[in-house]
Image 1 (cartoon, helix red, strand yellow):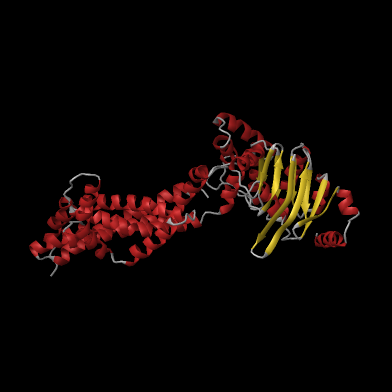
Image 2 (cartoon, chains in turn red, yellow):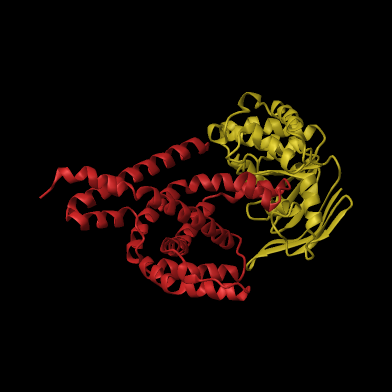
Length: 229
Length: 246
C-alpha cells in the first residue's frame, strides 16, 4: 500500500513548488500586513468615515470564505483592470492577468482583515502612559510612533504575525481551484500521474511542517532578541 | 509666570474641575494636596494639555491660551517648557535608562547625540543612576524607574516641573530615595508643582500649599498657614485623616 520507492522522485517533484509557494506567501504576508496595519491605525486613531469603512471591510473579508473571494476576483478582476485602464485612457487586456496574480490579490484582500486585528491587538497592548509621557515632552504623533510605539508594537505582534504566515501558506492551496500550482497542488498533480496519493500527500505534510518549524523558530528568536522589556 | 483661570472640566455628569484658579510665581514650590478624586492630577495635566479642560485660560509667561480655542503652537510651546513626572513612571520600555533621557533631547530639541549624552550623564549622576544607565526598564525597581523619569524630565531643562503623585505607586521602602531626589530638585530653584499625599514631605519642601476639594482650590497658603492654622473645618478634617493614616 505504501511504496518507499516513489518517495524520492515524488519529493523532488513536489519540492520544486516550494520556492513559488514561499514567494507568493511572502508577497501576501507583506502587503496584507501593511494594509492591515493601516486599517488598525485608522481604528486606533478613530478617524471618522474611514473607520466605518474598515469595520465593514473586516466583517466582509473575515466572513466570506477565501475560495469564494478567489472565484469572485477570478471572474471580475480582468474586467476591473480593463475598466481602470479605460479611465486613464489605456487599453489593457485584463484577461492576460496570470492566475497567480489573481490568487495573490484575493488572499491579500482576505488576510488584510485578519492582519488588521493582529495589529489592533498589539496597539491596544501599548500602555498609553508612555504616549502621555512623550506628548508631555513635546513629541509629535509621528515621533511618538517612530521612536516608541512602533518598536514596541512590532515585537508584541511577532507571534501572531508568524502564525499568519502559516495561515497564508495553507490558504495558497486554494489556488488549486484556479490552476495555481503550490505545494499542495503539485502533490496532487504528481500523485495523479502515478496514483501514489498517500505518498505524495505525506511528502507535502512533511514539507509544510518543516516550513512551519522554521518560521516559528525564526519568529521566537527574533522576538526574544527584540523584546527588551 | 504660570496662571490658570477658571478651569472647568467634567466627565459625563461628574464635575472634576469646577472653576480652578491658580497662579505660580517663578521659583515657587507648590504642593497640591486634597482628597482623592478632587482633580489634583487632572489640574496638573491641564497645564501640558494631556487632559483637555472644557473651558478656562492658561497664561505661561507670554504664552496665552483659551482652552476653548485650541492653539497647537501654544500647547507645543508649553510642553517644551514643562516636564512631567508620572505616578506610573511611564518610562519608554524599548529604551535603556540613558536612551530614555537622551531621546527627547535628540528628537524634540534636535541636539546632537554627543551633547544629549553629556546632559543625560549629568542628570543620571544627579538622580544616582549612573551605574544603571545601560539597563532596560524591565530590570529596574520602581524607585529606579521613577528616578529615570525624573532625570528624563530634568534633562529637557524645563522652566516648570510637574510631579504627579511621584511616590504613590512605590513600595514604602523605595519612597525615600525618590523623595530625596525631588527635594534636591525643589531646592535647586526650579519652579515645581507637586501633587502628593506625603504631607510631611510637602511641608518640608514647599513654600506654598494648595488644598483642593471638590474641584476648586479650597485653601492656598504657606505650609505653616495650611498645616498649623487650617482655615476651614474641611481642611482640618482632611489633614487629620491624613495624619492618622500616616
